[in-house]
Length: 114
Length: 116
View 1 (cartoon, helix red, strand yellow):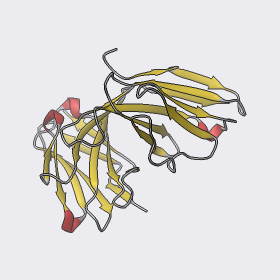
View 2: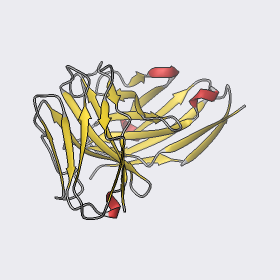
View 3: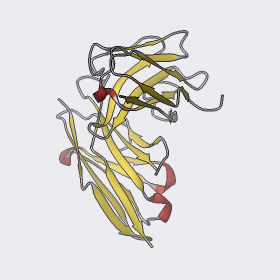
View 4: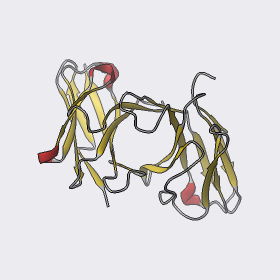
């Protein structure tokens, strides 16, 4: 079965600092990969997705993620954190052998310090 | 409407009762997705529809769960004989097509289900 690992359930950065949220997946076949964001007391929102096109994917709000097959990773980055980026972020993978199911990581809560 | 809507927004039910959750996707969106979010299980994918068809129902937690979509629009998620572990926020999303590279996925506000 597919699995997704998000390293660090809580990440804290200072405003203006680099944001790096880690996601690794288990798969021998390049899957489809996603990052979702959930702002406090708000619904879920798709940040970006990788669907076997360019390995560097740009999303909303200045976020981007790079698919690295050799590392089975899809880390999310943003060059400069903003207070409004404080939220919970979820990485997800669509099954390599079953394109009909998604598997989510356990989430990373990002705190941005002034 | 302009976005994905879900009803009811909150539902409290007694253990053993059946509940029906409704999702109205954005008009013209052919793909519709159901997820649930709970404290114990985190975020889980349940099922997706392409048109009225759900290719894989194995993500539904048990045979007490069923989902259907009619007319390529409204979808209902039905939970029979509810159990306390069914308590969660049930989220619905829709997109123009399934996983089209430039496609955006839009989420509804969710239905908070509490089984007492």
